[in-house]
Amino acid sequence: MKETFDFKHLHAQIVFADESFEEEIFHQENLVQLFPYGLSLATDAARPLLLLKDETYQYTLPVAISPIEAGVAMSQNNKSKVMSTPHRFTENLLQSLDMEIKQAVFVEIRGSHQYLRLYLSGHKEMNSIKLRADEVMSLCLHLNVPLFATKAYIGRSRVMNAAMEAREQKQATLGFIMDKPGYLN
Image (tube, helix red, strand yellow):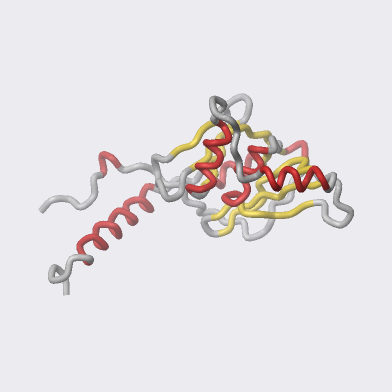
């Protein structure tokens, strides 16, 4: 009988095994500044990874984002075309209100989602807001917001587990078989 899984081509999947459930407490001097490095579609096209690295390339933070965020980030980075972004309104709104996003810090992992705290200036009542990273990364990149994380957060985010992809492949294989009536009762 033929194996259902092709272990030679098994890729690692990012799994956030160490959920923080509480927001990470940090000091500014313990933060590592991260810069956009690349986009990986290899693990799961439905959930691309934006790769962020520090300036020495010692630390890598994979950020799972939606395909829409990935597309926006890629189109914003294309310097050969006239820049088009869905974030122009947000940028103009922030400017008209004299508000600025000073920095974004990765602070929490909950389930399969990473969370960023955006630190704001120019608002009299609100100085920060916490949002899912997969919903705000392209905005942060567009506005050139400095991105930070602690080394501990980077470590928790890099937990890889090939068994997850194997499980997904098995489910996909079973789903394909079960879609054909008459093969399984």
